Length: 405
Ligand SMILES: [Zn+2]
Ligand SMILES: [Zn+2]
Image: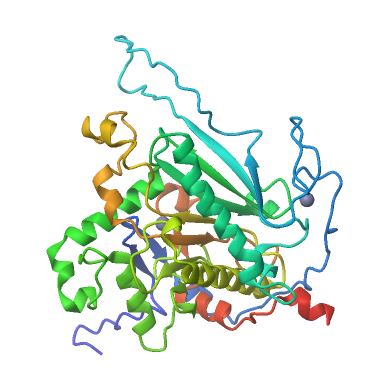
């Protein structure tokens, strides 16, 4: 007890704010609200299985798509250009309207969008692909290969592309309209807000001399010898006593519930050994490691509430087409007025994967970012440490495979 008679701050007890160094923002934590004992999943396991093939599904092999395209009779991972793309490659001339008011600003956006069917089976999610008879090496590595292919192919074919956003929106709770396991790849002629913010943070961290100190950097450096925000976080989590926020780790990656998580069971997958700027920079061993840890994380999440855990998952990485865009970059990083994330920040990029899953207490009780969170800042009750323990306590065998035994 201090002389002030104030109780000592206890982060497992007292409301506090946690800092997110990637977005340089805060989340309000209210751990006292979880003091009641955990009620656990009150629902029986979700066992309704979709068929392996659905003749009406526009993603199943050999099926027709609404716009007249037809899917290959694919046997592994398969991608095609999105028939309802959010962006178009069309280059338009922006008129310089002298009368336009600076408060009413807009700029054209170009891009191409692709859909990746993870697997021919209509009913096999990423979460199930690392439990026998499936293996991450055989069934998830092809997904990573497709990501690599598109990351390289899109800018090669479309030199205007600056950023490739790879993501998966899983489950109707996240607004996903087709249950066939699939992801998306949107490419853009600018760096969107979230990755731009994070690239700037990674750069600022590397350039801050204070972070070069051993106590802060933990002796970790990126491939150019600079302090690395995300490599340091990986080391900090892996070397902390009892690893309270680590879910799992392998030779090359670590999965954590980040200290600053907003979503109850939010997960961040980080390279643990070296700077890997983009998905195309993975060695084949690293691709296998990433496949393993992504499969394990998705499987554990499904097992938390014994349901197909919805989420938005996405990859942040180095922007592309550095050479192709060099000429426009020299005219000023923001010459198109597109946000921030100047080209100089690209050099500090570290590949990482975010999972934002909305479920809170059961397969049907989810968190909404509303009220205080819309008006003020994000807030959570469950601490990152409690969430990590819940996920860590889950099996790495998918619950549906166990139920089938
Ligand atoms: Zn399907
Ligand atoms: Zn990120």
